[in-house]
Image (cartoon, rainbow, N blue to C red; front, side):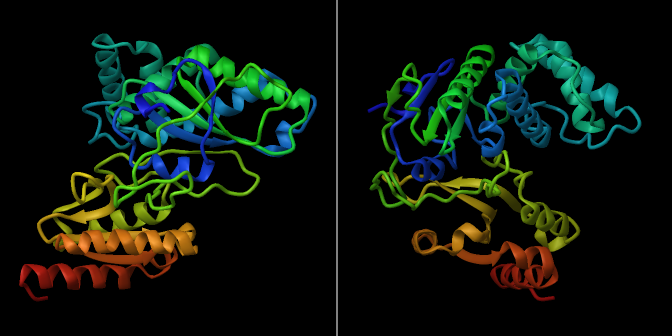
Length: 351
């Protein structure tokens, strides 16, 4: 059994653990873990016998690139107030990127280009090898981690040729990016060079865990059927860039004076023997937690897990206000009114 810090980076391994339990256990990122992103490739493309390693690599790099751009400015210190290419924006982020590279392991020209593209868009001019290494460093920096790993779901129904292309592409990524590539999902019976390891399971909120433990809260965007999707944990202090409902709520709260004191995606530890819980939105002084529930919260296991989380928070004096994502996106005024009413009650104010 291996802990998160023991799992290898720079190589491809298969994780002997339930894929759903693994997905739930990486948000929030466990201590000692690299920055972990989850990737589900398009099955239709992998089933194409003409699919090449270069094409697979290109599709993964597009997804990693999109994640890095969405996470800006988490990976570029000093860029938080720069939100557009106008004025001196491009020159400012370029200077910040070059300074950042001069004090660390980043390749300055790549980091400067990525920072500029975060503001102005456009494709990268760098070759795949440079992009793979640079994106892995940027993603690790976004979460304050030393390395990056990609949790790749192996689709069902891959033939022998497709399995070989799939593994070769994963090996390319692991070697060029010096990242962990951890496989879950369907077996690769036609490829025998991928070793299997079993990570040590992480405890759930009340201190117990099983391979199918459903009790971790997952804030990563849902995977659309049939679509390639790179999902990733939220960065503390910011709404998740892949969550339209979190972004919409933050945009609305930013216009409300009463919303002062809020903090997004904070980690909370109910007690020393419990696993941490990631809270969507927190007002610490008022001890108010706001959770935005997507479709995955409507299943029986997740519903029960949410109730357990709520009880743990309530025992510590927190109130939990829950809204479904559709409500946030279609009736945000009601959501704002209910949050404001609660906060004013806790503050002992009116109006």
